[in-house]
Amino acid sequence: MSAKIGINGAIKIGKYFACDAHDPASEVRVVTHAHFDHIINLNSSLKESKRVVMTEATRDLLQVIKRKLNLKSKVLPARYGETLKWKDQKLTLHYADHIIGAAQVLVEDEKGNRIVYTGDFRLPKTPILDADILIMEATYGKPDLKRPPTDVIREALVKLVKKSLAMGPVHIFGFHGKAQEVMELLRNSGFTQPFIATSKVYIVTEVCRKHGMRVGEVLLKGTMEAEEVMKSGEYIMFHHASTLRTVKINGVKIHLTGWEFRKIIWKVANKHYRVALSDHADFTQLILYAATSKPKLVITDNYRVGYAAILAKEIERRLGIKAIPMP
Image: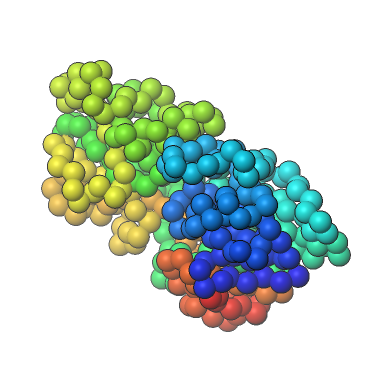
């Protein structure tokens, strides 16, 4: 069984499969989730590949994020744990705790050899799969990139939002998936204040609601109802993280970012905070996954943002497992 990460970011597994970027030689394209660095040249795959496999939630997210894509003819939605036989090999998607619809990929040949690609993930909710070859993300693959458990960070965020509402409206900035995770967290923590979302966040939130996330009522910014709520001054508004530096707000600004390692909550300025909430594994979790999976070889993703070369060295040093960054 062969495994390789190409210079264009394609995770090539076995004879037939390429994940998260287009590979003209692969018959089947797999999309692990809907973030931009995992849908590279998807339009080419929709034209040239025989099938494009993803979860139903990922397909629905892409339909609202990338409206020009034709997802009807080639896309084969797959459930977690459902196995697709393709000639002499098998493909199975498994749950990954990242954004809604995110998946790990398992490819097996007729002899039972197993290649696992984690995609982006977070422990402890992501199941750790046994592998002969493990391909893994390396976003926080540097030894000093460690953070407290996610539940501790989430609890601190809830307390910050409660405190901040006493000073006026709260504006939360996060990428797709993370913003909706916080909506659900706040609702489950008893927040009844109105939620407002900008258009980009709103359309993704509606997909998350369809697939079971409990976000409660969310108003679309710019509607009459949202404008009336904003006059009251007591609301929580969600913005896409890309607008952090351009949007002018009146109230408290909370930026959700996995790249905050100084403290769980870092006060940037008056009424401006960074919260260390990530939907990626930190260094400790990456090492734990590799140790528990027990592969003969680990390939770290050196195409996407992260520390693939450092992680590979640490896996060899700490675990005694051969590890190489690619490309």
